[in-house]
Length: 75
Image 1 (tube, rainbow, N blue to C red):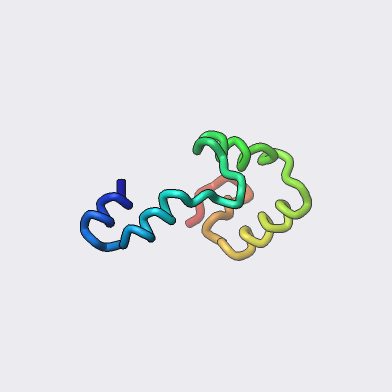
Image 2: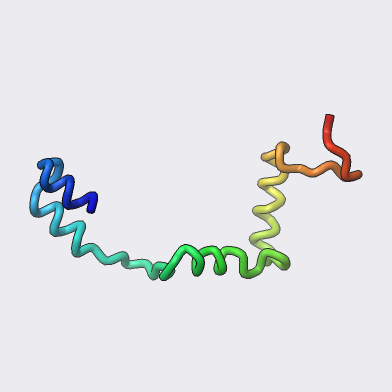
């Protein structure tokens, strides 16, 4: 729809419209947002070594994401 409006409003030319309309990603895509979410959460309970390393990096960088050790609210 956005491409059609852009073409009608002369924000893009016919060649750009055609190229965008016929574009196919060289990377396989998920069929839906749910499929992508399922994939992203597949190993959430048991992350592999690379994921665990990145989680550690995020925790060190984002102190706002840390939960208090004793369960009390900070403050």
